[in-house]
Amino acid sequence: MTGQHDIRLFLADVDGALVTKDKVLTEAAKAAVRELDQAGVAFAITSGRPPRGMSMLIVPLALRTAIAGFNGGVLVNPDLSVIESHTLDPAVAKQTVKLILDQGLDAWVYTETEWLIRDKKAPHVAREAWTVKFDAKLVASFTDAHLTHAVKIVGISDDLDLVAACEKSAQRELGAKASAARSQPYYLDVTHPRANKGTVVETLSRLLNILPAQIATMGDMPNDVLMFRKSGFSIAMGNASDEVKAQASAVTDSNENEGFAKAVRKFVLRTAA
Image (cartoon, rainbow, N blue to C red):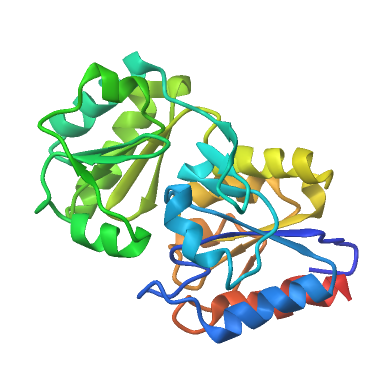
């Protein structure tokens, strides 16, 4: 990275990038965001999490920009008021649930306000509730009424090869009707075609009147590559796969070793100065 890069916005993924494996926002990360603000560089976050599942980050980071939940499926202000929302087509939502269950994964459905599950003891339910700080709603099945309001559908399995294979099947079968990408090795996120992190870059560019070339992005998973491609500079986490690292402009340390703070100082603040 050279001085020709004029970074005015830094957009970071949350899990696997901004926070540690144990979902901790470190003091170094908070200090790095304050330093961005002092340098006149805006900071924003995006995640597969629902917006309310990122609310615990708003005050510690003094966030003032739009927050992109559900990989851009719902954008909210820091007071959680909705800026824009992208709901899946009901027929596509129904097809997605069938595809995920037929492939042997569990399924969750998210609306703007609710997280719907079929089994409270299913893999990752307890961990996800701890992470996002609210509980899921148990339903016997996903009804047409539920799917009419689906913003994100998740396929879940601890068989990571199965999740990767389901990702490819979803991309092939849903095509342009949805965006399908892994947000964690055990999560496949399916959202509206405009609800992806590449579109988040474009939306923040429009809302903040900042050119995409002036936006730096950071992430660790395949769904972050879409925002890498749309931004002027991209940073992969040290804990990212080689495939993700190969598609970034630079690589920082892991999220367990202050990779976020190190990247801010090495790649963003240096050019801002």
